[in-house]
Image (cartoon, rainbow, N blue to C red; front, side, top):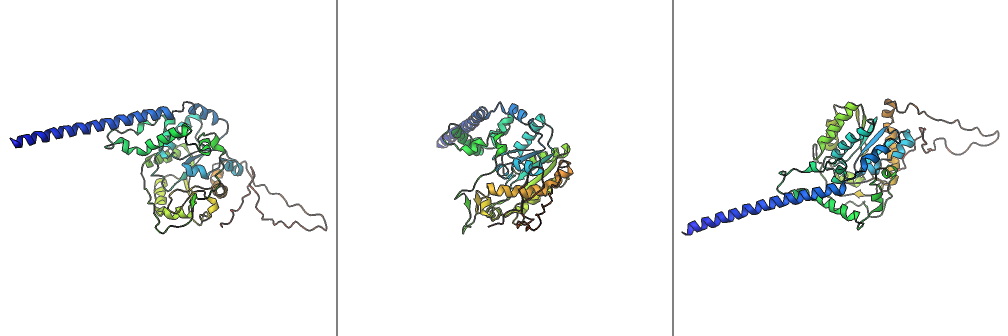
Length: 377
């Protein structure tokens, strides 16, 4: 009698537990689908395609710059025009990973011819990056992120996306507004961004006793296959591709201690693409990583570091001098030539100017004058 009662209670408990699990499962999926639907309406930008299509026709863009916020902080379209005489369009912000860049490039080709040159900013965490929904919504790609049985809880799995959504809601309501950040969200205004000044406390310059090191997230990671697709498509389109490993402050460089693994992954991905060229500026002998004036954040224990306005100017001069050869090979610089002026002869009896002939001159449009980077302090 007692055994039959205990079996009955066990079955009753088991049935109740199954119903509870089913309820939680359905509640989790239902609430997540509602959030995704709300994200789609919130982020939807119906005017983006038209505005972009109109803007891209205003200039003969030869160069497309892609990447994350580190790319946005590191490259100046202004410098490409000033030094190389080339119009460059930059499409880079935090949360624009390989998936977004692939979608954007497909969209770009519906509005204009493929660019002659693509410059892609490479981060240590490129394969750890996941494209944010605020950007994927431009191409109605938010719902592609739903995989109903990919995890016990979709709410927990997508916790970061949901937190970003809540932060964006608060920002749009004006409760937390960063005017400088919001101004660069518009892709047209972003073309005029020239860098950010350093500010106290943003850069960690003292090495802590217990340094937390960051391991490299290898290929394929979260969106690596999209980068592979991009490389293959650029090869088919005859695009010259320049992958630039962006410099970090020395503290971040040492914190991200598996730099060689990152470089090895890039080399494996690009070995079958002769149109792809890798430039590694994240080395002490390639860029003054110890100069604190060249970085506005990052440092020891931080895996992320951005160039400051002063650092951007130096970096762009060094970079463009290096990659000019690819523009020449693509016959994009045939209209440029070296402009050299004969020094004026002083009148008889007058001493020559004391200014040395090697004094660097700022590069002007259509010229080939290069300024040496300031010495690291």
